[in-house]
Amino acid sequence: MECIKTLDLNGTYTYADYMKWGGEERAELINGKVFPIPNTPGTVHQRISGMLSAEIWQLLKNSDYQIFAAPFDVRLSKFDGKTDEEINTVVQPDISVICDPNKVDERGCLGAPDWVIEILSPGNVGKEMNEKFDVYEESGVKEYWLVKPDDEVVFVYILDEAGKYVGLKPATIGRTLTSITIPEFTIDMNQLFDKK
Image 1 (tube, rainbow, N blue to C red):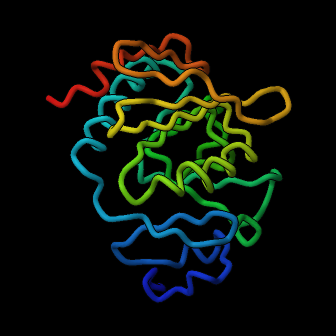
Image 2: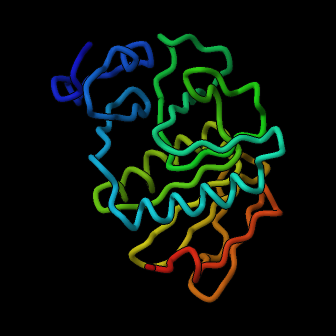
Image 3: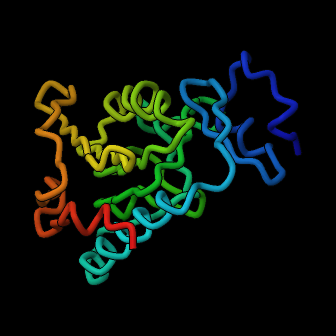
């Protein structure tokens, strides 16, 4: 097993390489490049993740749809049927909602989740808003939420017919937000950002 700290961060890797990495550290692989995941997320991040996961799970528990919280590997590819040696993007979204149960296997999700939620923390803003935005768009994630706790806002992006993200009006305190993927799911922004 290789340790992530010993990897050449300028090198290019595949999912087959990723499977050999060991230790306590976690990383994501985006277009072959290694992005170490910062250690433990903060309390606000965990509170928001826990609340959203619980609310979505409650709604989906009797359906074929599945929800997973990080750490959960999502192997993304522009092409179906790639081998471990050909897949070069493995991410761990904070929350993944997968409507097709055939995409889920013992190693995580193979293919794009239908809905991804990422919670921004200091140190991951650039990766979430740039690299991951691009790979989620390219791989066909239909709905992408970026939760920004510091500003108490959620940015929502939906894939259009051309496969490009269209940003919706940001959701702020005093509003409710409804998922496009699961229209039965609505969250009150005051509840989401409640610090109690």
